[in-house]
Length: 129
Image 1 (cartoon, one colour):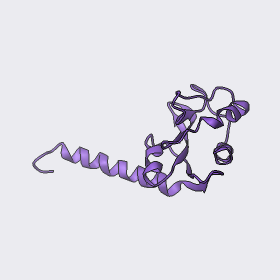
Image 2 (spheres, one colour):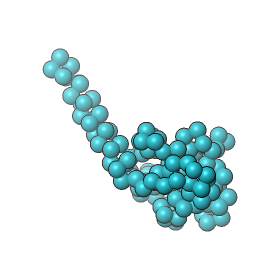
Image 3 (cartoon, helix red, strand yellow):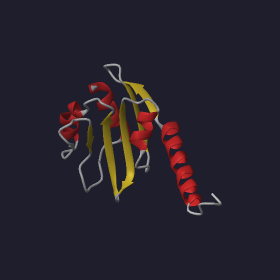
């Protein structure tokens, strides 16, 4: 770090990132879906929470960010697994859920707080996958 003064900032940012990854994994609730997939759910402001859960072995991740760009936002994602089979049930509970055609990631309605609880979304995903 002495030969590279900017390296201190990198090391500091890397340490903070590692702390956030560890917290997301430690705070996650783990379950097995109805088809046997390993699923983790967590409430976290960490943008990298889905990747952290994948790194810890989750095949499916449900993340609630309580303050994503000012709104309470869910992300449901599958690591090579389609998760869009839950869209119809989530849209019946709260219209506006969606995602890209790949079906491996989706989210709650854009630009407004989700009205669903983490437990409710997690249970829909666990039961449907």
